[in-house]
Length: 278
Image (cartoon, rainbow, N blue to C red; front, side):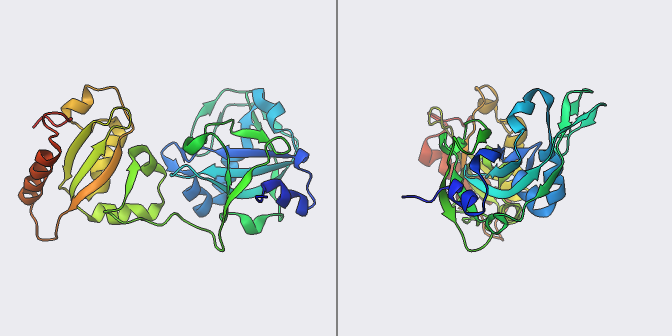
């Protein structure tokens, strides 16, 4: 029988019927929520404690078990909170992290206290939330009705390790929620990359030649969806999967990288059947 989250609650003397499960999105206003939780837990908790009055019935439980999605679709446990009676915010309020302006009288603020129960599992325990890699099921659930299977348990708090420049394959959107340590090696490397459309398999070969390397170039796609490329601009937006085809050596010039890019375009025939237009 697989280990389940409710077993841990019951072992800690907490009735699952008293617990609301919350799974936060991996990225909020362009920030990785895992990174916020690690670096500024108070800010994360301020964000979590502010909820809509209209959904008050969903949150009126003595405990919240908080989880956050990760860049690769997993669901990580970040803490158990003892929660009090909500206090209506009478004036306008700007929510933490998301910086959304909420009209007066539409927001509750919940008093909370981090529970010592299950604290040793924060950042170490992952559950199967359901809904496939996207985790697209209700983000607030009743623990007694949704007994989550424990999918991973690590000895230490984990950050998804960087797989390596040549091994990395990920949707562009996932990079918004990638661990902070990923940016450095990707910014330090230049070369040729591949974009693959998950919808129809179309390919685009591109190059990163400037300061900031792959990380900076891919940020342009994340910002506008097309990175300035004509064929991508004219298509329906898609969450392209990105990977590196070739890393340039430290002595290679921009012209060297562009020449390598042209070779890869010929290999993939991406000017004829792909998305390259030059």
